[in-house]
Image 1 (cartoon, rainbow, N blue to C red):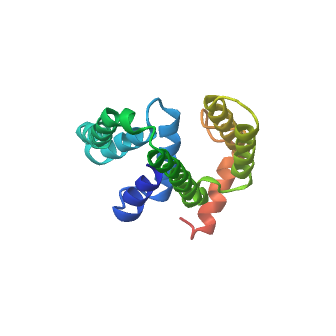
Image 2: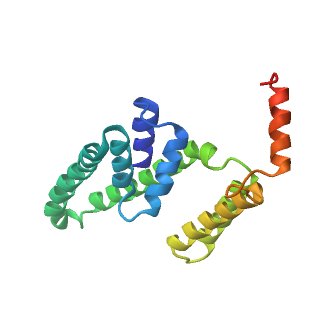
Image 3: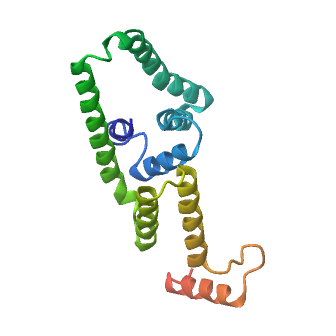
Length: 180
């Protein structure tokens, strides 16, 4: 579903840009439920509000439910046939390639600096070498991103009046920008 969403939502229809797509995939993965349905709900809601979210969810879910129901009705009688087993093996390979393709297309907007590269490397290593639950990996990545963001900002004066350094920066910026 991810490569299909990428192609349809970004490349073909232009409903989202690459950065929005990465953000939606990230959020959708963190929420309970199927990522395709969560992404469809967000896109539908973005463009048509609550009715759009509902219709988008139904549009993603109903075809799958119908196809899976039909396959399930007949699969038990065909599952032991070697050709069917080989077809499922081929489908697994195809799905793996599609996921890798989506990762390569989206990486340029997800891994943007050294910090995100280090987070990626750490989470990837933990995912491959340990049996940590995905929720823990997502939490580690999120907390790391927040911590790095806070460290980059430094102390914040958002709650109080600006200090003298902030005022002098504003004055110098105004004078450099043409005096206004």
